[in-house]
Image 1: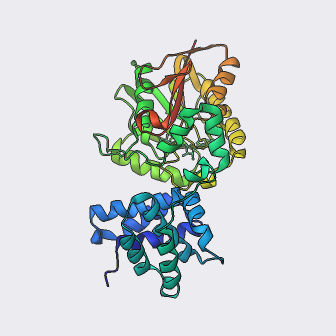
Image 2: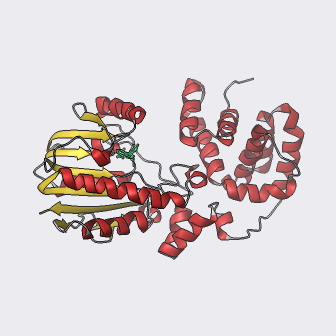
Image 3: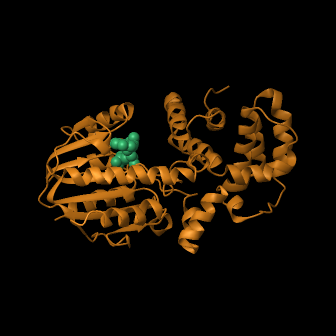
Length: 374
Ligand SMILES: C[S@@+](CC[C@H](N)C(=O)[O-])C[C@H]1O[C@@H](n2cnc3c(N)ncnc32)[C@H](O)[C@@H]1O
């Protein structure tokens, strides 16, 4: 028997995710350990099975629930979800979805998985609500609809078929919306000078900085993430100095730098497609906690910025609290700031910045604001 088949690898990864492992890390490590045994196409299929099954968990469980009477072991539940995802969302022919899933199911449960998937293959799902159908927790669904109306619904649906980013010219794989942020940082400071990226790991935006900067500092609070940051800097943009510190008490002199980027920690609600398990982990309470961190980072960025310098704030989320409200609060408490207009036409204008929703261009949702210190 072949040791690595797409479904076998996907089922092992999904079982670990069921047991609490993080989806992106788990998938990456299984793909790495399957070495050259899987073709490029197979690796794509494993990715779809793992990410899609994780993302669509609520919808899948709704369809499975009538056929399950007892609590299941995590590997059996993972097999049922993976088979149902193929039937429900991938249009896999029923005989292939059922037989090929049963073939990789632990033998003790193959009869159960076979019987349940056969029943699932005949159902026409009835959805109790849109959140179940599109597989989001109620609070995320309601927040997007309350904030953005029909655009909120379109955003959530778009995040179920996320962007597949292409590599930059230097080979770094980065989403388009993140590239737009780096473009705005560069465009606002044509004279370059010294820039500090206050929240830098894994280094996507730091390594994308334009060539006008004479010195770049990549700051990161988390030492293990800083190691990954250093690896990316060595590979894609050698010479950037890595600093490990809490960016709300950064070791830079007051008024000393020409530009600061605060690509802040956030709920990531604009990047739910790229992080398939995030919707099941992030909580509504996190918004309030993160807003405080975002405000503290902005205050510190202001402190180290020289008069005439440019401050950029970005987050891959689209909640009002973390975007326009953080921006308005910050500007109101710092009279020496003048808002700048973003140059890219893809931003929905929200002075002094803009927001891209996930369905606008099929990218992550992203928000960005920019000021000049007088
Ligand atoms: C959105 S990510 C940054 C992504 C990065 N700019 C890029 O484009 O690849 C936010 C980062 O901020 C870091 N972080 C969180 N709180 C921080 C703090 N108080 N000071 C500095 N970094 C922080 C997180 O560990 C995380 O690596």
